[in-house]
Amino acid sequence: MAKKENNYCVIMAGGVGSRFWPFSREEKPKQFLDFFGTGRSLLQMTIDRFRPIVPVENMFIVTNIAYKHLILEQVPDIKESQILCEPARRNTAPCIAYATAHIRALCLRRAGLTAANQDWTREEMKANIVVAASDHLILEEEKFRQTILKAFDFVSEYNAICTLGMQPTRPETGYGYIQYINERSQSELNDGMSVAKPLNDGIYPVKTFTEKPNLEMAKVFLESGDFLWNSGIFIWNLQTISEAFRYLLPEVADRFREGELLMGTDKEEGFIEEMFPKCPNISIDYGIMEKADNVYVMPSSFGWSDLGTWGSLYELSEKDEDGNVSLHSEAHFHEAKGNIVVLEPGKKAIVQGVEDMIIVEEKGALLVCKKAEEQRIKQFVSEL
Image (cartoon, rainbow, N blue to C red):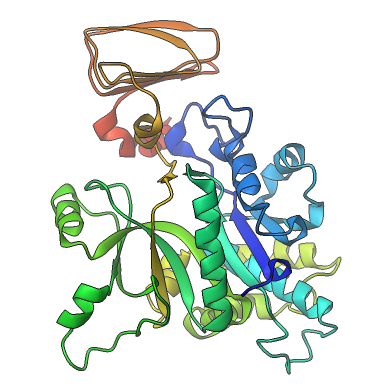
């Protein structure tokens, strides 16, 4: 069983949250906002979720340098050294490579080794890492923690990359999908097909990753029973992910190898500022997950939602008898159905005769958009 002191957490918190405009702005994006009036931002809720299973000193937040002050304000028991600042946005693969290199330097130092001494073993490098976004919502948090602990045990024993797949409940077009080899599909595989074999009860080999499908394809995925929603939550051992970057994404790994003697020192920040913008802009899904042959998925169900759009927030919110949602404000609905209204606290609105609309006002900006067209909000904001 993986020991708590060997558990590490990497939280990605550098996004600008443009799909939640105008509530989320570049100067203070969605991960720093309190969407539900609980007094806790999405980032704070994420940190709180991991505290029982990961020591606070083993938590690292990767973010844009512009948000460092917000993190220090919202998570005062996180040290500055635990905030890894990206000088440029380069997608999730360089983000995770940075955190991996930093944790590796920390583990080497704790083991009395150096980057120049390469004769360390998996036993010495016991770090088991969970990578998660800062804007996910988890309703059943204890069930979530037990799932992560099981994944920690799995990756500490096997040279495997593990991800969590959510049991789909509807033909969702806003999520990516994972096709996995379960007990039924295992018996249907053709002889000679090269796939990873099951290593652990309840954890299965991944067959394919699929980007966001159209509605018809999403219905096929749901009916097949072989597909899960891609949660974007990853669990791996430090050595496993280091080797994956080395062999599958050397154009990123080589950048960090240039400064491995500087990681964990007072020269790390200068090295990152110079090197990081030179990294390719590439996601961890495309760079590692879709290429690796040792990827496994744990089908999970703990009330997960990727709080990525107004539509996802609508689905999670309490509704009136006509399916309307009003947050942070007092909205009165007449002959209106399926709408979400979010105003600045204390403001009132009358909404009449419209259906399935997003109506949001914040700091002098107003959004009125069809829910079915919300994927275009990012484009609209860019044009604005």
